[in-house]
Image (cartoon, rainbow, N blue to C red; front, side):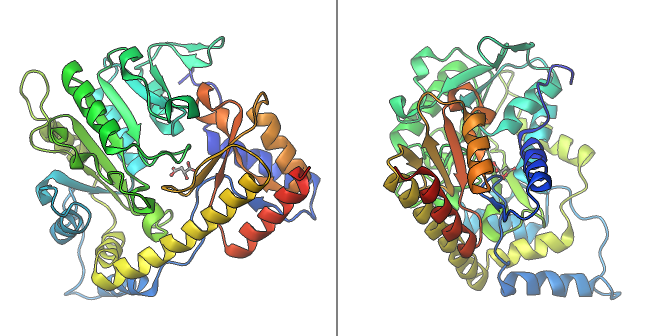
Length: 398
Ligand code: MLT
């Protein structure tokens, strides 16, 4: 724990935002910072949760502990709706309280003696939990990296996909696509390279697909679209950014039967053991909501909300492009990655907060290769997104 550099990124940003509000009590601060959903959960989904909650007050409807792996109908519905044609069995799906929590439980499973690689920049939970579990050395200030973590640089120069030839072998590879924070989605041929690389090296890929529903082009939505991925990859998914479940809490992890350690022991057996020991199953009310998300009516309603955020993303991309910034992401993810060449990310963050009262996320918070960028999240109500667009134009128009 003592090796950790600062507080977790998002609470640190909230701290700076609160300090700004204290200094400027009349400022109408808009958040394009943490990717937190703002739009109401569609009624068919909340109705199912309401009904479930009410049934808990009846003798017939009451239930206590559920299966640690999740309720069978929900596991089956995830297999059918999210992984149709990909031959994922419901028994390979573990329902949970969210992808971030599953990443911590995977770290517990892997233990301190494994080595990890992450995309740079990457979602900070992969790195910070690696430090917490004891997989890393200390923080090397000269390179802004933790010793023993493999940082796979993903920048506009390599189309946000690492040059695998220069990546040293690691046991575990965290890979998020569509990516948080850059918004880049790996193409089929890039993911084929990644799977081949993991196979060659005997590595396990932990593939974070939390933003797959935001994909607009035909890039894979799941690592299991790639032949051979079942032997090398675990995939996490989440209802948070699909259905506005950031507060409700519901996600899942897929561990295929064919994923084996080098001694032939199935990883799924260990993950099941971790889940049964460290987790008592996702909330039954949240699971009722998840099942409703995957019904025909819920799926349609949920996708309408996703489309709303996609329109927000287009507004932000257009804003930054119209101001002449090199702007990335936004097509396949609700995040826009904007370059400020030669500038320190935290300085840009501070300038936008102080002069436009807008919270963003400094790119360097996601890793050293994020220096010189900021991330704008498209989660927000339309009025705020339009107002943010106007303020950014006032601030940066030449
Ligand atoms: C983000 O802003 O990167 C996300 O909200 C973080 C998360 O999903 O935990």
